[in-house]
Image (tube, rainbow, N blue to C red):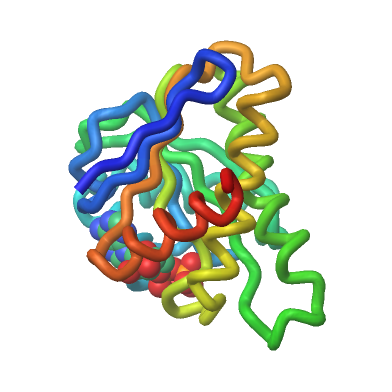
Length: 184
Ligand code: AR6
């Protein structure tokens, strides 16, 4: 399951899979503000990345405090195929009237800007906020894809490929449908 589209000479890829196996320069982690492993995609990234990821995340937490929603930081990828992990905190869904779309867009933008500043060419995102944080996936997919499209249409610098690695067929179909809505 894979869908690709070209935007301004760069590539946007939607695929079904496990982000911890993704062979890209950087994978994005949907982290908590404490940067502890937690569950879901974050637990999986810390497990497969190993202590190097968890320890560097803990050091960043000690040095700069909790991460605010929408911010992003970068650590090594440890034992992951990816060289880097970009950790960001998406919004918890409170019904949609608490600035959730803006905060979710900010999380994606922070990761993309960090990638740009680190000469990262390929980056993979999970579906931020749509698990434990409860953001309805149809809406989250629209925000995510619009934000990435805007970034690629503007000045993405070294960023050549953005992947969304969706964990289930249902999630993949939600992103695919959201793309059709945006592009159509
Ligand atoms: N690869 C790709 N996607 C995955 C993987 C994986 N290996 N595992 C889960 N997903 P969630 P959130 C999908 O709950 O809602 C953590 O405890 C999953 O199916 O991981 O942003 C953190 O510490 C869902 O579609 O993240 C935070 O406290 C998506 O990833 C909190 O959860 C996001 O689900 C963050 O909540």
